[in-house]
Length: 128
Image 1 (cartoon, rainbow, N blue to C red):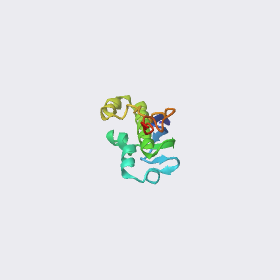
Image 2: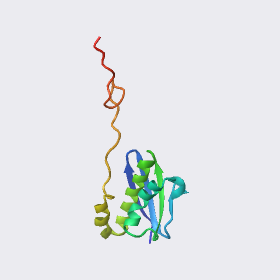
Image 3: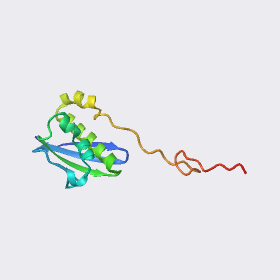
Image 4: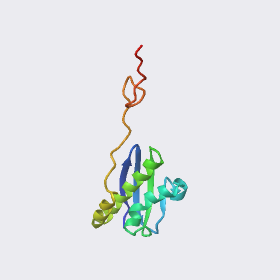
């Protein structure tokens, strides 16, 4: 099997994923998954598509992550892994779609407006 690549985005994070046949190793930016994401919750988020399809031990995953914070990065990696798995086996798409992994979350930070301290916050109003 050749290497399948896919891309996933979430907030400001971008994940490029390369999936190949292997024994279940997940490398993120040349570091092991448990080193890059010490939190077990974020590790679980990254592994969700693999464990949903019960193929966690069949593929090696290499991820290049940049931008954003750890939450956005983990969800970007999840989307990219999902897209790669759908490329490998299109029949798995309905199962992953039912779990909500196929849909890209479009929410991002709203831009700051001129004349205001933040996007929606206003300076304190003074009557006199």
